[in-house]
Length: 176
Image (tube, rainbow, N blue to C red; front, side, top):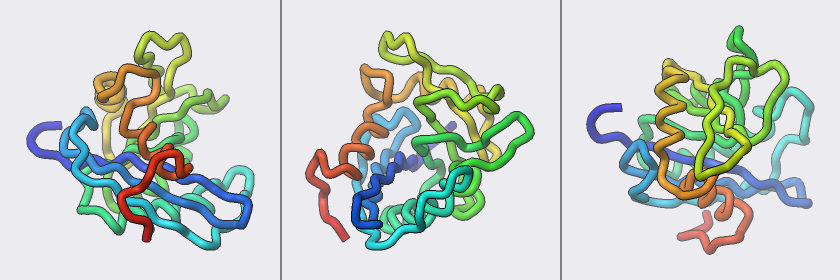
């Protein structure tokens, strides 16, 4: 990506009370090295888990936290953007459509049908991350982007930070 870019890394954590916390880490560079802001929101009621339809539960949470931040040029989600080589939409594709921006999906585990996912190894890890895209972003470019993201470990620092904020492991800036 050329020029200034606003990229968000997002994650959602569910609790035992049918609610969730969503976190967004906003960065001003595609390597997610320069954090501009962090946003956390509590969602009191989420849809129940439905196998094959995670987006019904997670997408409203993502939309809620993204609405708190600045307009994004790209969103990075923890999970798959597309689920197979034919482009069956996953969470990332649903987010790309709903938000009108490209999405890069970074999944930690393999999905049988996702033979199209680019495998990226980071930080000396033997297990790869599985990178997919939606919204017009090229998967090879996304794989290079994920490989170059800030952080010494398998999971890029901004994604790990979003996870920690959503789980309450780190203090959020302000919960809304």
